[in-house]
Length: 313
Image (cartoon, rainbow, N blue to C red):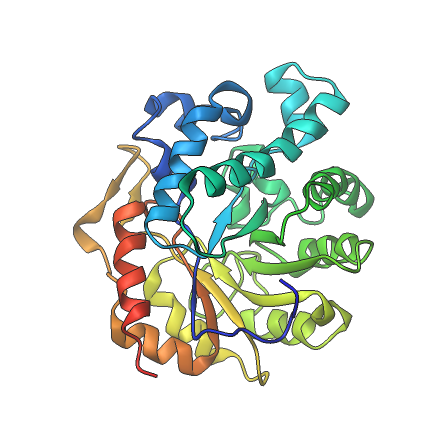
């Protein structure tokens, strides 16, 4: 995005869950039980990835996300038997695939690409992105070294925005934004995982995280800050908890169901569906980008597109 401070429409639509989007085209186990959780498909099933991206474009998104949340040099070397250079190029390829989907769909709209950068905890495959327990157990330099090539690959590939997502702690966010500062012309969004209506998953308050990163030098590169991968019912209290002024927010909650760890499936009997009233309230609080995370597919993103189009002026 050329201007990091001005959004020229009221609210932008981000895509939904990559997993939900890809499941019509691949076997469930090939993504849900793979340690790379869908990033392996950049190598193994490019056509399916393109189809999933195209579905979201047809649903009306303005931002398309690369399927690199779980991608890392170490992960690609370990699980795809690639070397460093091959792994680096594969991360870059995710951006090329997004461009291909945009070109093939020929929507006539401007669609920007967000390069997904998930937390280190996601690579552990044990839910660590939802508690941040690895913070303090891994050396800061090791965390820097693990993240750096992932970010460098996406920047070199020319993403419009780097999306730091599901980040559980201020510590890891600080490291990510220090790396971002090495690419001063690159714009980014910073999105945290939150455990309740006030706190990041690691325990710091969401309000303190917003205050820290929205008012320091990172602000020059951040276009939005917010939260993802949580119950939509938490969005209003989290936004309301922030006292920092003139914040541009991003949020993309889960589908609203509850994950049943025993049955390994979603219990959707308690689903909360985002309403036009929610969007109007969140818009007043500064929300500029909304999409969907886990268990949010093309149908829901299309529904949110309709809500955005009917927002009060």
